[in-house]
Picture (cartoon, rainbow, N blue to C red):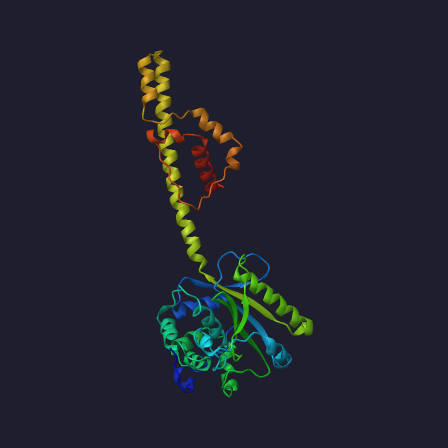
Length: 365
């Protein structure tokens, strides 16, 4: 479905005091996501492009210094870039031209969020995504500028100096920078291809697919290495940039891990308590037999047929002193089940005891 609309001039003064400049801080961007209503997503800074990533990545935000001279030098490069010019393709992904000054930070976030499936976007972004479906990039840009919830959330995180610059930049009506400024660009996987979404360009850039045996982030690394090498080769002192990744909220993973550890700690403590009770019971029986000098077949049958596992004090002490304790491989973040009883007899080896010991050592270091 295509929606044809006339240009929608944004009346910023009726929304807020205008869109203000944002600092490129991942913590600030994470707060901005929360204000948008997005859940379970955060932004973090990437310091080393070649370092393995610790979690899935929804998209990257590249911040660089925008200089008019470099834009002129890149005109030839842009002519050979793989622009996507098919109208239907463009209108059915979320690619918005930046029609409002200083809104590129919000544009960069939306370019990732609204092109990623299965994210909890919240009411505001869900409404925006539904409303702009099939719109051309220009009208999508106006739609962003005319969403008061986005403008208010954006401006609530503006740097103090930005408010003083509002009057000076009020004459910029299209969001196209002149002179020197900083600009945000998004990189996101869409339908098996790496897309570069830059609101200051007329079309999205398709960097092509990635190999079947690699992740899309590997393709991104190669594109960025080429980009940075090309620019720094021209004028080293001009290059200032940083890179941020939009990723799952790490608090969720750590909370799940902590919950698993606490549950496992409880289970192991209960298991050790049961082992201790069984062991004391057996030692008491042995002591009684020794004192009375009784070793009749009847008493032996009682021991052998007892429903309590036959664990000796020596086996536990040996486990404590064994070097295997330090080598025992146990993933403490996974749920474990430990049961002590007659049905466990086939599993009564040193692994249970060593696992309990290793687990407790983990918490008492």
